[in-house]
Amino acid sequence: MDTSSWVDTSLDLNPSSDRPLPLDTPKKEPSGNGNLIVFGKKLSMKEESGALVEELNRVNEENKKLTEKLAAMCESYNALQSQLTNLMSKIPEKELSPSKKRKSESSNNNNNNDNYNFGIIGNSESSSTDEDSCKKPKEEIMKAKVSRVYVRTEASDTSLVVKDGYQWRKYGQKVTRDNPSPRAYFKCSFAPTCPVKKKVQRSIDDQSVVIATYEGEHNHLPPPQMEPTSGSSHRGSASLNPSGPTMTLDFGKTKPSGSDVARICSSSQPKMDSPQVRQYLVEQMATSLTKDPKFTAALAAAISGRMFQQSPVE
DNA sequence: CGAATTTGACCGGCGC
DNA sequence: GCGCCGGTCAAATTCG
Image (cartoon, rainbow, N blue to C red):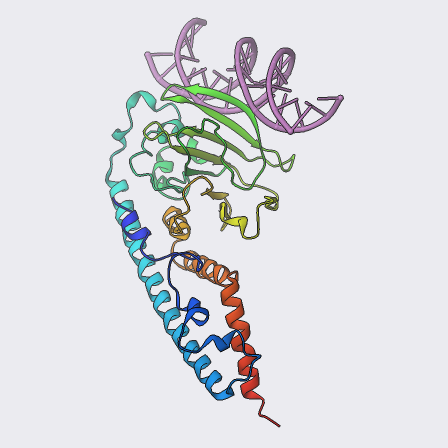
């Protein structure tokens, strides 16, 4: 399934990238509307407010279009997700090799490479094993929630470090039988009482993909991002914690493609797809818009222009 | 010198 | 009961 075909359509949330959003236009447009920024000069108020209203209308239209696109994308995502669920439910359990049915977890590690799309593929509790847990009540007693995250890193990067915003202390490393690359074991070291563990191992198929398996829930707030990199540095890694199990996605080492939100969308659980993801997307768009200095400058100019317009000359 | 990581030993669960 | 295997411990080592 080619997820990228719908992932990278138009969700570049960074207005300062190469996409010519109309918000950029007030500054560049040669047709005399530079007055948005330099409205301290002598300018006809009516001209200015008319241009502003026009601009606002255009922005509103663009906003509508973007919202529609977003809704369409989410719908197509939902459709794909349900298709995937159908397919997965049709695959019989004999897909797993009989010699590896020691533990549910190790066997789950085997079927996850053929459909990676950088996200949580299998949440052993929520996605697919509801009826399995009826057959195997033992597995259902798993108190710790398990989520799996796929992270693309440099293939040459041998350190199994996944920067997800938390602090981890490595306490072991093992070479497992089904995968020649070593598996690293981490505990959350931010809070001494935090029970969360994670296992990190390279994918057997794609050495540039690292599989991080999280067990348990953090009983503390995520530590503040103290990366001293400049200004809008939070682009490096995103983490969302929508409902319970820690779901962290790392995009730090990937090339910044601008479709991070779409990947979050593709990586989410089927349960939380529509309303929450949409809200998250809208929030992300709003955030990236408000962080753009051009946008804030234009907004400030527009607001002050409005205020001038509404208060009549006296 | 203290903290973090490495790595071999050890332990417990599971299949035969 | 024995051996295999994944997970954890803890002493040794490295790093800042």
